[in-house]
Image (cartoon, rainbow over all chains, first blue to last red):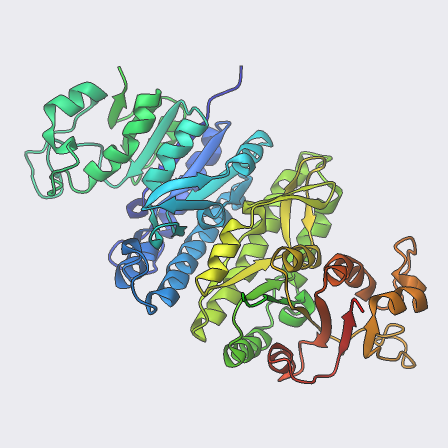
Length: 265
Length: 265
């Protein structure tokens, strides 16, 4: 039987310095590379966010709103280029740990339609995995058949890859310990949700409802909503703190770790 | 009527320091970016070689021979990564000149079969061109359905893109003035071939014959052989010295320039 893939998403907040544009968190990336090398799990797909590389330019040029003004054209170039810089840095750090990482540019093989993945040729990633490489993808500025271009989030990409490669689990490395009842950064009474079935989560937490505008969980809602199709497919989602030493290693090795597990049933 | 594409290939020898591994020729890249910005030709596709970024690792790990030993796996990762560094540098320099360059990674959308392009989804490049961007591709370490992996040369890529996008001309920027009867770097009696029809070239210069092993033209034979399908398709090939100021600008603007023109008839 073919081993199921494991998808590791490294949030932009876990690998860049959020407040400083275009600043990588080198020691965090080094540490993550060390843990990934130590865990040595087969069929690993890595996806990282943009953090302070992706967001400033994407915001400045309103890339996710699509092409509305010619001045955005150079902005798309800049946003994509900034992401290739971060990707190259992550890949290089992994290679130094002897991990056969291969950067794969989403904008080179994915087109979206109104912001949702429309066409994704997964042949190459499939072959990359089969040969023992670790593909490293990222949230990227991509072309869009309706809007001209947009931002494809790493989270949407993760869910899509999880379904395609029938992933056993998605490990979401963020900068908090998991999913909380409220935003733990601003509300000290926020409680960590340790384990949840998707239905319970939907029933108990009305914020899962897409229509709600305020994200009480500090940005986690959007991530969970993106992951739902993968969880419904049968992939477990594990949200952990990627900035705490040893956490990603233990999550990769399927050891017990502080965080939130969301399962279908 | 749709404008025909122009394909500009910047040889590795024109943008890197050949003798120093992983060393870009920054002033050459700056100068080329300035000339490309000044020429402002629409439907431009840029392809660059690997030079001192691509060759040392490709050679060390025998990437073009395909996967024969597990020790080559990390070598493929390193070779591809080195090319992304050079590509990122070229793209960034173009962006600084306000050229909306978009790096497109060949390994993310092309698979070869025994070293020849087997599958290339050109939808994205097509859309990139249509929107007014300048796609920037490169010779790359790519996956191969027969050999596991190989090196896809920028020249093979150029010919394939020229046919796909019905290019008006291919401009090959190298570090000599064009195609010579012998290697101009070692033979002072070598004469520049200024203009040639493909049939004349094949008739008069037996070296075009693939079977011959020695390349008397100083590495130009392989390039010409790769371009033949594009020339037969109806694309003119112009070989010029990319290291001489103003040459690429004039070639892009279709002005008279020292070099070799090869046409179908």
